[in-house]
Image 1 (cartoon, rainbow, N blue to C red):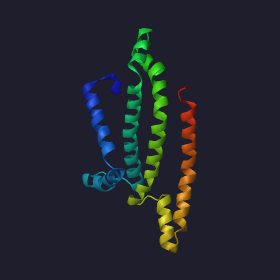
Image 2 (tube, one colour):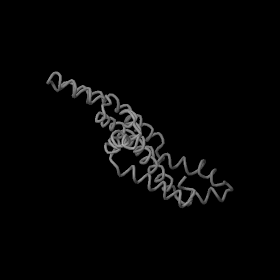
Image 3 (cartoon, rainbow, N blue to C red):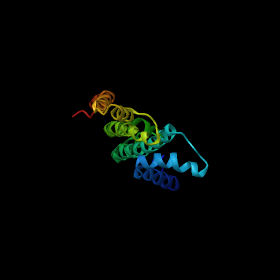
Image 4 (tube, rainbow, N blue to C red):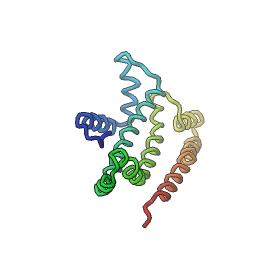
Length: 175
């Protein structure tokens, strides 16, 4: 949408994206869970955590895609337009395939980081791996549940990292 260069819309997008990139997810979770009831809107802990983390991911994803699109050399746009392709055809057939290659590593990284942020949901009583491990430690006074929780995160995220690396090498520029 930012590539359409509609100034008021661009300003709104930039403001919203910068706002959600600047606010820590924990602050957003607390604001949605504890602050919105004061305005007459209440939501459960899961919804507050989901909405907060989704908005933060949306903001970073928009910036990643925008950076990918703007990283495509202007000559690519001009060459596609000179062959008779329209704006949307140029975007779809020339620019986005190149931009996607550049956005895979940061998108993988941001997705993993925001998924790790689900541990923040324990602040509003949403059970997660870390919360369950801490409950186990407080019950048994044994740190083994924390070790198992760490291993669970490794089991969850190692395949994502490996898949991200595979996709990155699969779509890497041929040298």
